[in-house]
Length: 245
Image (cartoon, rainbow, N blue to C red; front, top):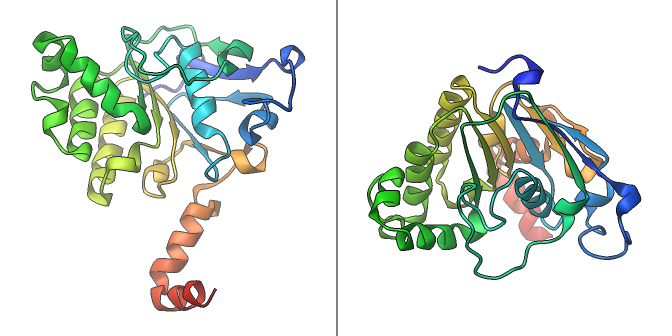
């Protein structure tokens, strides 16, 4: 497991505010961008949480592009583009890297995973073998996600995941946690945007709340944990409140 902060692959990211043309235009008007100054990454796992529309995915995309990944997802060797919808935010980020370079890496985003799977098939069977040997399209969404994580993530890498829980059942989310830990033990670093109280339970991680100016927050203080716990402790009461509203 990485312990020395100088051994992490990315140490921090800074928004170059003096170069921003206007804070009233996209993507600089997004809450996640407006509130960003400097964000320090944990050497193992960093979570970014916040409401829908806060701009977590846009920021994660910009960080990924700054690291050399394809904006639609994949490894650094992927250069396909189905539609150029990514923002220019990466041009205004200063990424501070660690001493070591990752041997592996992947940017996984739920919304464009279908396009990544299609590109893998187009590139032929030799590449497909690195993803488990079976077409990702021939598997369910959740199965293809896990096949990717289990077979393609090789360790000693930088892995950026955007809402990986989108395709995963609670059981598979637990399996993902197990795999994340295996990879962390093999000198890997993760940056993850998530809404899942299961996934963000990974111990000793940094959790940044985008909605509150990137405050670092304890797991048990997150809305995701508190609301889920309150609901599961008394679902009937919660449903009465929700349905009356």
